Image (cartoon, rainbow, N blue to C red; front, side):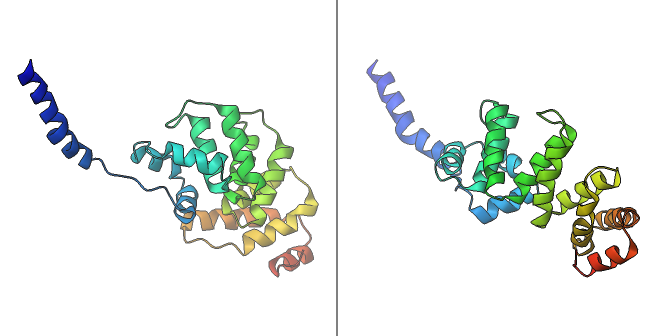
Length: 205
């Protein structure tokens, strides 16, 4: 029995520390790093890659510090059940919290969800409200989706010039996206008088 006791003691004193040393400590993300991950849609996969070690830190920064980037991440984690128990209503709540603080990615995502009816019933009016705000904050995904909505005959013609100006002055190095924007602008231009299109190209609307 005594021999067994010392064997167990040896294991905890010698073997366990060496195993613990192999576990990589993960530092909580900075706002800039997290925003880059969100823009690339890699925020959830990064949490998984970090073996869910930062769940408590993320929750604290979302619920206590009320940082919009962390509210967005925490909302996504809850909505999709990543490293936490799935809770869609609470997840949407934190997405809205981030959107209320003006996070473009949160505004775009909620607009997209209302548009396609993900987690909620489709609501084109709510979709346009969120997408317009995200588009005004230079979110290209929101601008493109909004142009598709307008080209499908929805939305107010009074808003067309502003979106045309935003897309006309948008920047992307992706050839496929560039071509898509060109096509959307061409279709949107047919819905406005030429003089309005010219003014929109000059940023006047």
